[in-house]
Length: 77
Image (cartoon, rainbow, N blue to C red; front, side):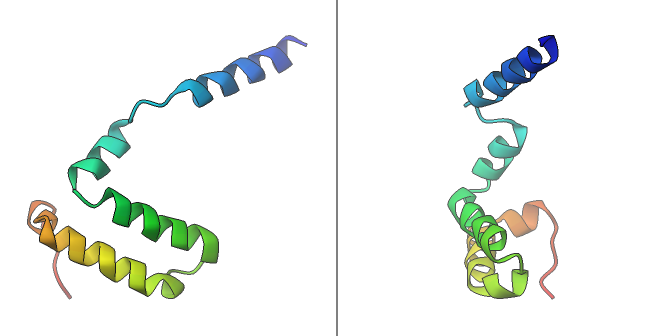
């Protein structure tokens, strides 16, 4: 019984956590959080990045527009 209670308590802790974590803060700081969410949602639904080319391109343009390509030293290939 106590094992079941600890599982319920752990689930409640996760549900109550609505503060942004380090990952959220990092994504929000890019200025492209909405575009990132749409891109990852697309992949979650389709399970194939090739089906999400439009979303990836929108994210890539946002990333460049906000100067993130310079701060991450990514290369345009």
